[in-house]
Length: 145
Ligand code: ZN
Image (cartoon, rainbow, N blue to C red; front, side, top):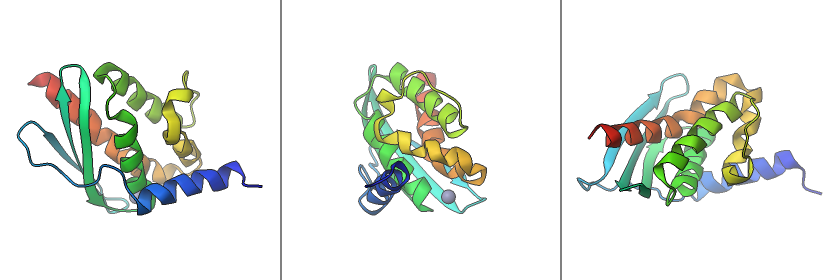
């Protein structure tokens, strides 16, 4: 029997070893955000292309721990193709979840639900949220433009 914790670890390792949407696009239509988490040495670059209301494409690149890098992969996969307002809701739910708070819609978190266990390790919360902070900043930049 595989338990929940093993399953969570599996998702994290799969996304760390075989990241989805990795590699940046240097197209002027892509908004670029670069964030660091000095406490762990995580360095994350996220770029996205928003077309109208839709998160058309999300890419990431960087280096850091398995929590940070896998989370970028999961985030890009989950938010790509979503409407911007929904992406923002999911980002906020993610922040609540890693703090150990209940969220209203667990179903739509899909693979991102595995980071719920991070709430037990407060020092790693910044690792888990780095790519999400980056995409949030990119969305805010797109609204300003
Ligand atoms: Zn880290």
